[in-house]
Image (cartoon, rainbow, N blue to C red):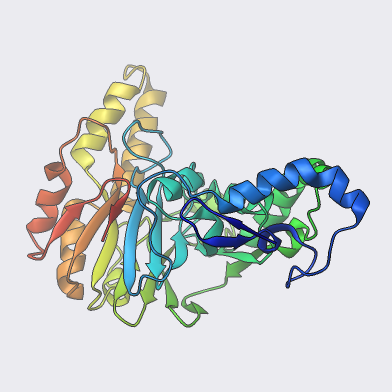
Length: 361
């Protein structure tokens, strides 16, 4: 069974809701009658072009980087979405982090959220992992039957269990409405990253993880905390792209994983702007408790995030070809790009871009 999308391409309805992989086993008459309305909606969703800028050609060769969300969370921003990036290799979409609203950011960038197969989470802060479950859920709700997998630090597998429980009422309702032959438990997959090294490989990419320096737990409260934070190196046939993840100064760890990369996508924080923003935001500086909170937050920013100058040192030492700055902290709407770029250029002489949402490299 086929339908024409608006661009004239034939699309099989069976790709989205028939009972088997070939789409050649008819549904029963009862099922067909009870599910026709929702099935039509799913079919139209399958055929409809997504809004946003012109969609990327799925057969387009080569490697492309999209900065989907460039705000350093967890504060929402008018101009920037929560952290997320996409790497598109020969038309295949690989998602790096999945902050709030990532499905919409994919659509705005002209990328089909239904076609994301592999998701990589740098660390388990909610500005980075909040919506990977939601993205999977939306894929399933519009008819996805093939697996989608998330790779993340220890805790990712248990999070999937929690999401499946959260998602169950939606599954029950949609399954009662229409024929949904594959349950989410057979579509959604999660894999904990157990340590540094190669974590994924297919015909397009090899993905290597290295622990970065985002977490400096208080020894009194950390205990046996297993949480890790990672940088990822993606090697394709035509490019090497590294995503730093959130990290403070980290010795040579980021330098090593970024060695000779074509693009280094690196987080950045401006400490003077952070201090000014915190002073303005905190309700009172008169109390000792408020001042202690301020000092704790500044310590976090200094130790767990990277200044522009630190990014420049890393990029120069690694010999990367281009730096793309993202995850701006504080990242307020009235800030100049130069507040972040100028410090990088003190040490790195190659091209530096302060990314905005939806940019392609």
